[in-house]
Length: 318
Length: 318
Image (cartoon, rainbow over the protein chains, first blue to last red):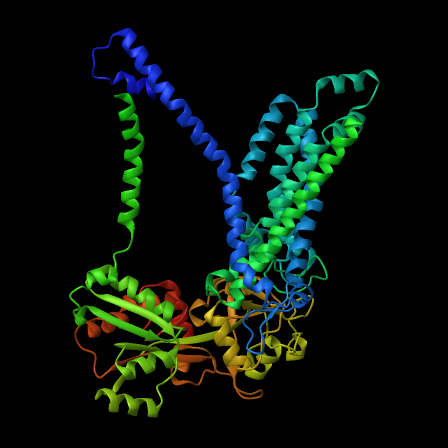
């Protein structure tokens, strides 16, 4: 840019003058670019705090007064628009979120880690490249398309295979969320595995370890932090996902008794109901309190991850 | 020199963007109607059920008649009628008929008698899977299926052997609680003092209900009549158990014999004239009635040429 800028200088193009102009432009540009980059970096923090502030401001009124917190956490009755008495109990929604996310992780973690081990350690160069591209493609599918697949394709398959009365349920949501988090888990944990120095592998081979022993005894412990980060990123993706679960889980307020029961998640509730509520109204405030609950869950997950990672590091240093 | 250029190069795009941002803002309604000519403004008030419809009409009409400003607000049928009586609204939307007392008061207050124009019908059909042998259902039975504390949970309790449904349980499909259909169904079937039973599968759109029920042998659902497809079957509805059921249709909805329907009407003071008359004529035209159908209501005149419409029409005539 500055070069092009200098070229358009109307004064006769003498070499030294051009050089001088260029230098001036660079002198002027560099701090500017530096500042822009600095602002980009700090903006992340700014945005987090702004969102934090906004969600708390909207939810605080209900959180601090007005909302019966005991009922909020222990009642499975979510009836915000009841004609008898509005009830705001999120137990069933919480159970929905936990069951779907839990199932998704049960499927996605072994699948993702297995895929990462294969891609990083076993696959030949050609299949490795193909797999990586395809997995990245999987990550690029929009969540609404995933929801659509769950609703239209997976639902009938589940009915056919299990005899369940409806195909959109915990199982469906769990499988869809698992497929959505697998690409993240694979790519992050594959990076972690590849970051393990080759000397580790060579040393293990020299000691006569089999390939499986190298993976389970050497690579996994060495790449622990990265693998944990991968799993937690997957959990984060699964908990926060809205559109796919809204379509694939059935959106029914109940505590699930089996994998084949439809459920409703916290995120889907906010997505489905926020649009019609009036700012300042009770229902609106409660939806923001649910937002705060989701924030708290995310915070706990991240904090746990941090502590675990730090703990592992601490052990290493000893 | 180059510094100046750089500043200009950075500032100019920002300026242009800012200008574009200002330019895309909606025109201030006060600015366009500055002369205060009453002819060009139509004030519409009333039913919340119809507020989406009224807004859709206004938006579509404005595309061809930008000179007319249509101001739509909800608040309820009663509010709209009150405004009409006070002369504050030119047109009232009402999902109920005006009472004799209100008619008299309007005449006393304004000197002209309100004219009623039925613009559509809000009729819900009860849908089941096409292999479900059930033909007819009564309102009390529906209330026991959908209502809080209701006892009807299996198809056999309704006296049918729903062979395709392995579990034999009734899977309730409902709407999300921000939907007008949800509220109308609750009012018409469960009465004013009863909530829905939790655990129903809540879909976000009328079409989704039909799609899900058509793929689920155990399911029962409700949706606007206009959403009927060949893949699904609707039930005849009777007021009381043992009475013959009434087939949903334009004719039965219009004469009131079909239980879950109500006319949607517009009231004007005296015969509409000028811009108001043009607008109402347009509402009753194919274009206006197509919007009625698009929003899930039953048009009073089926707009031609649309395949889905013809299905609903012929089904209604059977």
